[in-house]
Length: 280
Image (cartoon, rainbow, N blue to C red; front, side, top):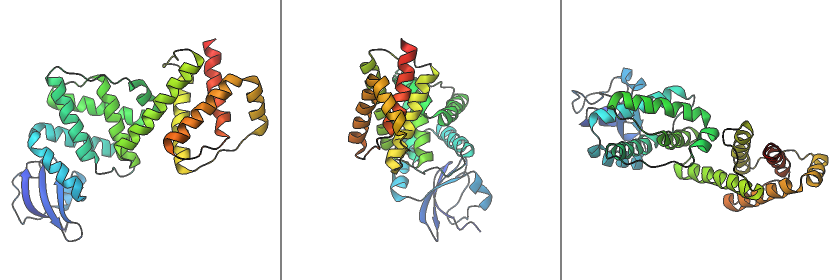
């Protein structure tokens, strides 16, 4: 017994159902609404291929999107979310159904009208979230295979952020804020060193990833050990890099509203110095 009883069929892919524990839910799955009748119980076998929206706000948002979506496109998006779900080990935040559906809907509309939106942070996004990026590439391929519409490279970056948001259980706005903070910190490094950093270099990738995990540590209140002797040595040997690292720390503290431990300056200085050394 699944406990899910059909209340109303919205289309071939979406059914309103009721459940004794969850109340009214929106059940989403390719073909789930086909030939369904009110009062019918949804078979348990369906639920490895079906998503259930339990949050009322998400339900309403999804229902508002439905009239705008061609059923074939909707089926392709549902398949894409299944692909993402199959590739991750944890549970996806259910907002991905609204967020990614909405994003893909308008992305496909823009492309069909000959419009494209540039993504100036694509390289950083790939570096920040390589696992999610690999999945996003497969989503783009699946969408093209099912709809015949090829989405531009920049869209991979936006889809990557949606996937990371669902995996990390963070609001997309929060993910965007933290990503923008890292982009800004990289720009500060470039300004202070007076160079354009080679974004294909391994040292650049290491700095971007270091900043990402530094943001995560600050938000979690985690501290790193401070090697005092190294701190003194770096301050004397590489004063420019050491000062830049403190500029970054102050920006991070202001943007995140949380303290950053002094020891972070040591590790940041080493990353910046490695970049400076390659530039000279």
